[in-house]
Amino acid sequence: DAKTTQPTSMDCAEGRAANLPCNHSTISGNEYVYWYRQIHSQGPQYIIHGLKNNETNEMASLIITEDRKSSTLILPHATLRDTAVYYCIVRVGSGTYKYIFGTGTRLKVLA
Amino acid sequence: DVKVTQSSRYLVKRTGEKVFLECVQDMDHENMFWYRQDPGLGLRLIYFSYDVKMKEKGDIPEGYSVSREKKERFSLILESASTNQTSMYLCASISGIGKNEQFFGPGTRLTVL
Image 1 (cartoon, each protein chain N blue to C red):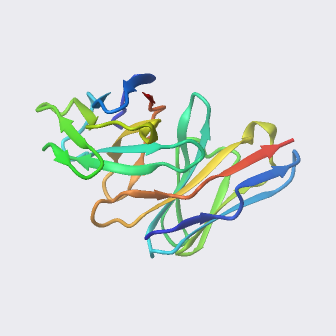
Image 2 (cartoon, rainbow over the protein chains, first blue to last red):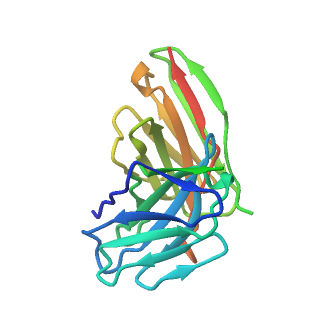
């Protein structure tokens, strides 16, 4: 099963772009990369996902390298409310939807 | 909006008690999950279910069992609670179509004394 590696913590200034890296060097060709975030005392919340093309939605952008061994989640204009733990997940298993969550990156947005 | 609800936000039990954690989702999702979350360890999958009466072990099933008698309800059972089961328990569900995003409940913080 593909695993992910993320930095333990990062800081970002309010209003600046937050770039959160994730390494998934053992990812298989049909596995998607998902990003979730967890704000204190709440359950994780879906942000974005992708297979090999870059993706953008109203919350964030996802950049996946051509070899798919790593990706970056970009929050274009970080706010204090983006302070959270961000999880990069590779979806494993065909026919089931088992996810493996790592320990994530604790992002702190500074005023 | 999908809603995943858990029976309690906070629960205190004694060692050896049988504990039931209930999770209900209202969007007819096929797949449901139970995780526990501990500081420094992230979310770890205990059990998941992809259909009524079907279950599969996750990464840390020891000391737990589950029940899925109805599609909307997935229960986590601690047969004999122990202090090392003190944790935050999170339930989630996935539709299986579209984005396949997991929807999480608010969590139950269980303390076993």
